[in-house]
Length: 534
Image (cartoon, rainbow, N blue to C red; front, top):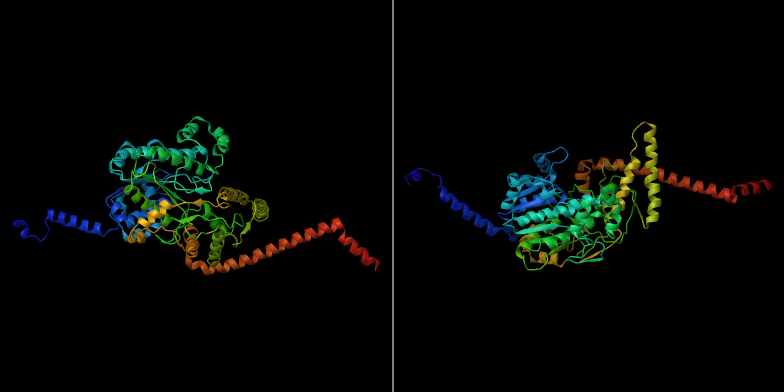
């Protein structure tokens, strides 16, 4: 005791008691969702993707007492796991986290693996590490390419989830598993409820098929395999849900079905995206001046959900599943779509985003923002020939003459492939039920609703699309806001040139039509004969 009388330092056992009481106080102040994640170890597949980045950032920033986050990371483009981790956290989306929690990297653990390999490509040591430590699993990884080859789609979207479920069965402290699917996994149905639907083929059946049949033959079989499904993505995601239903009944598991996930609304920064698939790709194409005609139903509902709201809902579903496990025969399903009470149409989406883009054009655009919407596939074909193919052909001829590599026609082939892939979704409207998702929102405390907002009730689409447009300019085109005045002047000059070309072309067409009818009906010769007679 004498030692401590002359020493002002606090004895270690007193420090432990103080720390324990401090944790109790912090936990008492935390919201129910924060309390749930306190001390938990989370495993995320697909953490380096669009949705995964926001999930990592939100968990580390809003759940400060989380123990650790384990990420499945594979070697890619000559980068090892640590190099990919360093690249991941250089993204501007983590800038706020670096300010508010500068030591966040201490909680992130990268494990080398590959979602497309047996046992996720994990080493025995890493498998044991995950089995001992993990309490919550988010399975986000998937190939989202609509035109993916069937073998690759099955490998990633069906075999991968199966390996995750096998690993989860060994986790003794598991509290929740969330499998991220898509709202369009059952898109062949007009009404999609929060329930399981029959699969066109069993998971075992399709996995055995792709393993036993030659790849070239598989490609020939793909149309008959898909049936009414528009692509391999929705087809395999639907089958994966059946896999979860059959293999996950004794696990604390749920399925989360987000619609089209697009730019962030408010967190961690407004309008952020690094993903130009789907709806965002249309706006990027228009903003670059390359996409000059589109075919979609202007009255169809655009089921778009901001990535930050999507992640907030995802985080809440794990909390809900853990609190309600074993209360139902099948795992719960959460449909997360946008049209809760005020829908956004594709026509409004495109027109509003284009309006804001015209107010802050990019200095890197190739042409002015002028996109004509075709009401039918036939009209779209005619427009695309005039507005896409003909200009591309002329550009390639010019490049060929000066000895440079042609690229315009190839670029427009890719654009048309992209438009064909998304056309199924922007010409239809689905009716989604979302009782589970709405019920989850209603069960949150006011504090959690403020910390993890995901309700789409009375959503301000106008404000959101303004932030989307500004975000695309800044984070995709990499244009600083200070360049807007210069970009406006540049766009004004391009618009003058555009109008000169457009009206010259129309004049040429009128002249050709006049000459054609003059030749057929003899308009010119009749006039000359009458003049000569007079």
